[in-house]
Image: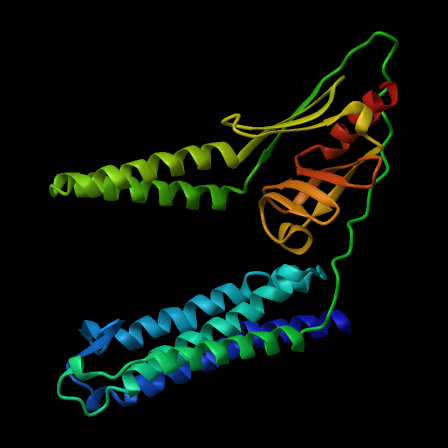
Length: 326
């Protein structure tokens, strides 16, 4: 029953509330378009309104920022919640969705409401008080969305027992594997890098050399980061466990003498570590690039090291053997 309640509440504050707030905001804006100047103020500086756009662009942006984006954020962890997984990140994302939709819905609707009846959008009044009110309302809505969800701590994954590999005296052995992000995420990151690179080429062609150089540098940095942090090489040998990024920018080690136990587990990045990549949470450090099979190593002090990798049982059996020898 508690699991069903958690899922219902997550759907409510992560999808239903943002949908209602976003649709209401867009509806109000569309209804008052006839009372607005052809171009409305969309940016304010110290001296007042200084940026203008066609009035119809505001409902369009509201549909994106107060409706589509919050719903996408709030629904990200629903599958994990439905599977019975728990964690602060799975509770936080729906709350953020409610807060974001409230902020953008009030702010963007309010800026149009203040411009009703104006002949010139340059006469638009200050929005400082509106901004403060929107932020206060967003924080209040987000906190309420957090509190309405059941308070549940993440449950540590069950450890599967392993039989250590048998090593004869003087015999050495090595286990090698890879920790890789999912294909969909890797494709999205690659596409984003290519898109930024294409922007650099276009900027160069049109003659904006300064922008082209800056964007090209960003492309190189993105390429290095994608190549380095989407694949990690995992190695178990007589020295212990070594996890190295593909670009060798990061190397994490657990010496064999520092291994109390090793076991295969099933992990959920969002539920147990609040996300993906190199993560650090109380009591654990991890290299989690996807959900699923992982190797968990426990040190003498109780702190854990987790890395997602195929054949985690084989890695655990080998590491247990070399730890016993050490």
